[in-house]
Image (cartoon, rainbow, N blue to C red; front, side, top):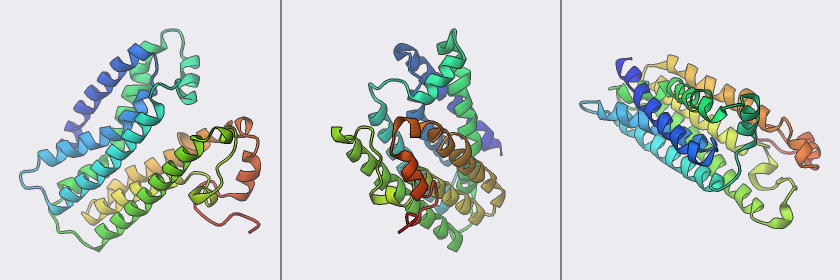
Length: 255
């Protein structure tokens, strides 16, 4: 646990740097691009502090590296030179005046602490010295499934939005035909995979952080928050929601 607590400091410093950069643009959406990098920073630090990293430590570093770099790059390109995300506009409106200064703890430090808590299974798995086993590969299988849904879903959404005649329309083809949130479903599979790898390392209690992350994705910052007003902005969304599962992929109702 000593190494786990040590990873918090660089994450807080990184959050502070991100906040200082947000002051120039007066836009805190930057924190979305930093989110996945918090985990790579913590994992890399844990790995570097191992005298003889195990095969599992190498595995976790590889998986987290691929996931975090892909997600951060995607979010940076998507949000670059765009207006502040509606989620943060709402937080800003509730916390004026001087939100740009308050955002250091309301947004950046808060997310650093969340990332630190959620990184627990990564830390525990990285410090394990036991040999890889079947449960590790089940975890990797969930990670691959999750990455597939996330990457394909993001690519299909980007392509859909690139066509001007699709503005205001609802994407209901590809993986979006089977779930309204393939990216959140994919992210949940990835974190379930990390939790299973921690369990394979003999630290099953680390799964609590993975479960918490999945809870956030479904009930707090992901599905629930995104769907709060999307039907008002996209007229066809109510019919799409009636036919299509919100989270778990399945065939559309009525087919």
